Image (cartoon, rainbow, N blue to C red; front, side, top):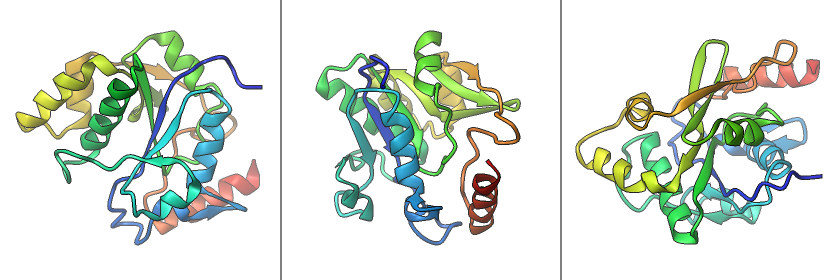
Length: 198
């Protein structure tokens, strides 16, 4: 049963995946793709709309979710996807939006609840590391982020500091970092081994 949290979620999948060599979200761990694993995890935690930050002609469009291509500041890194997410939230009248990366197959089942409890803006953290693309953001920050990008901002952690996002720590379950991300083929092989051991 899904908790009664109506929160839009944008899966950030607009990166070039140069180190991986292909669309990361289509890689499989067991029978499911990375994208499907992320979709299933967040869908169990919110009744809100789930969209994918990717081009309309992306192979991710086959998953049946709305695609949100970047409209401004293209090729400026992850902050571009965050701006797209905040723009969408403003357009639909949502006060907040959750962003998650497409390459994080082990997201925690309490991600949405804990970030909402902490209050936005908030980002995930684990094992003494912060994961700013896993974050809950007030849509009211859209104009400030656009201004920061116009001024040349490109650092995600710089944006985190600027908007005062608080880190919310998630503990490992057994040996799995819930925010392990797949950047290379070696990472994918490791993720498959982790999934086999869980």
